Each structure stands twice: as C-alpha cells, then as structure tokens.
Image 1 (cartoon, protein in one colour):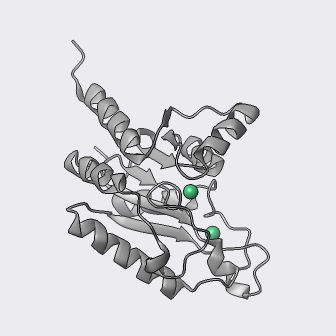
Image 2 (image 1 turned 60 degrees about the horizontal axis):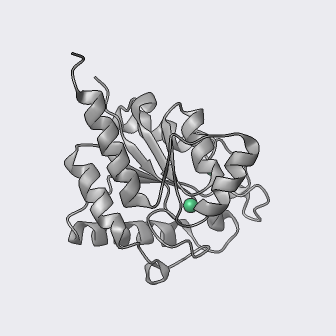
Image 3 (image 1 turned 45 degrees about the vertical axis):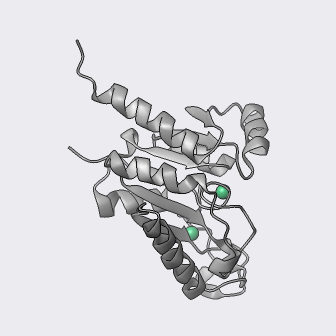
Length: 197
Ligand SMILES: [Mg+2]
Ligand SMILES: [Zn+2]
C-alpha cells in the first residue's frame, strides 16, 4: 500500500512569516513545531515541506540561499530529534526579471506541482495525505490533490479563515497551530487504522 504523508507549509506554519528571509538567522521556528514533527515522525508519516518562494523570482534571495536555509532548518530539527523528510519549493514569479523564473508555473501553490513531485518521489497516496498551512492557497492545494487540508491559525491563519468562509471553502480542520494540527491528524490516523468491528 502507498504511504500517506503530511505536507507542511513553511512560513506562518513552521516558522514566523517574515517575508522573504535570505538567511537562517532571520528564521524564527515556532517552538511547538519540533514536538509536532516528532509526533508525526513517530507515527511513521513522512513530513514534507511545500513552500512558495517567489522571493527567488523577485531577486530577493537565491536558490543557494534557500537551500542553505533548508539545510540549517533540517539540522535544527535534527537537534531536537525531529525529522523533516524533504523540502519542495516553487521559485517562480510571473513578472520575474530573471528569465528562468519568469513562469506561470504549475508548482506555485495552490497548483499541485510540488505535491505531485513529492508523491512520485516518495510513492504517496495523496488522497490519504494531509496539507497543513496558514493561507487560502494551502487549503485549496489540499483540496486540489484530494488530501485533507488543515488550516493553522498562526501566520495569516485568522485572515485566511475569514477569506475561506467568504469563498465557501472548508478545511477538514482548523487548528490553533502546527502541534494542534499534528494531534488532530494522529487522532484521525488512529481512527482510520482501527479495524471495522
Ligand atoms: Mg504560509
Ligand atoms: Zn513554480
């Protein structure tokens, strides 16, 4: 059977959304993120970060900057005995001055490109997977790939909750933060694993 996974948005979900950081020193991880990822790891769910990084297309940071940030983030989670299995990012910006990033792409969330790539790499069943994020685009992505979308109220979450109500889109769950989201996901998984009496 194919595995299911938990996709996590980065900014506003794992760490404070500070615009377009180009250095890990500018990234502030929410303290509860480590415990959230540890618990998901213990349940055997791959934890995969999907992040829109149009700052690259905007010329605010390079892909090398971003890879370094992600390596350091992975290492800081490792120190806390938590494992981020992979990072997938969209560097594109439709109006980019840099031709290779000037693209109306299929990987910018809510488009499914990043999740499809991860699904191919990890052999994932998207319909049994989860997408956790603080923006409308994260929730719509979750729906687009037929996964369960979970809105967190950190980052732009409160604002997104209103916007989602306006457009009539319902997340599978609204969580206070990433740890609350993990707890809900693990409860759901436990229920799904129970044999039918
Ligand atoms: Mg976000
Ligand atoms: Zn893209």
